[in-house]
Image 1 (cartoon, rainbow, N blue to C red):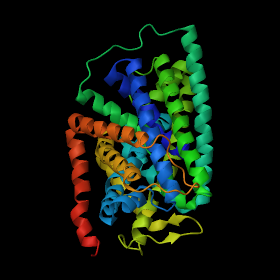
Image 2 (image 1 turned 135 degrees about the vertical axis):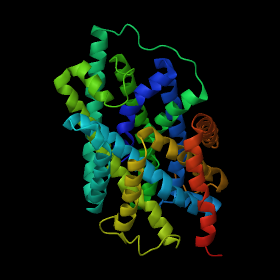
Image 3 (image 1 turned 45 degrees about the horizontal axis):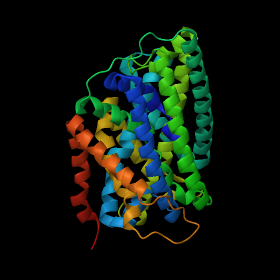
Image 4 (image 1 turned 180 degrees about the vertical axis):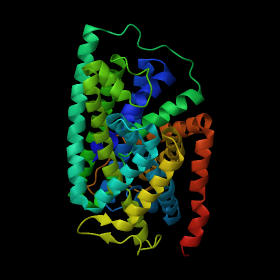
Length: 411
């Protein structure tokens, strides 16, 4: 699930923007490394929390246990209106860009195609968790095979004809670095969704730590290799849109470039399937706590489907896809997602550590969580300085959840 969701359109849309912003391959690799370290530290915290509280909802459950129902409600509010539809809309738009390349359709169809992708995978989710699981497995295997082919071909081409100049250093400012950091976070985004599914995972105390830590490590390796391959292939300085098509034409010829675009669409398919599967679990947890209308979120235990929650997510994501561009949507939901991610990981510090040997315990405690929180704070400051408009809009919507919580939560 982690490979299928995380390795999506982000890796193919972000390298060009990162290279233009940062200027050199060394800076880009440093950013990838920092984001990988941040993600791995967060995964250590989440692995401990997920094995201790293997219930539907993930972050929502951890915030409720550590900080109370009101804090958990605000997170659920943020997930409903900002993070989940934002991530879904960004994936839909990214996939639409490549479907246009594959089909040769007019770019004016981008919004319609994005909404069609969102609705299509919402319908797929409603068929049941077994169908979604098959999609996750097949798309994850396809991504790993594509990575091997792509990286190997780029290295062969570089050995035979190395590029004369890979990049030129540029001055770094918050306005320049912030979009690159947001893009890198988006590329890693979604690994925490496995915590939302922990209630449905067999032997969570054994499975969840392996899946989270192993999945994050594998994703980090994939991203570094793909970024280097794109740069060596001479493609990183090009446009974000259809970047892989350009790289494919240089590596395999024009005829094969569309095949790589199809691979990107496959990657987006896996990510959309995973997001659609995991996101409704937060709303289900809220309904169990009487913080969301239970009739709207009836959960089919046999098929693993919540029809109402899936339709709400798809509707809001379609609205965002119609109103914003790819980069605007990222700036809208990423800062809030980063803040809530850090707050939920801080539950490891607030809650007394369980003595049960079956529960995973993060090593070197509390160093991983402290490292994670320092990087989270640094990212939020960078977002506020580099993209103040999008950050403010997202923060305002999240803040509205606090007064709403007083109307919803009874004393």
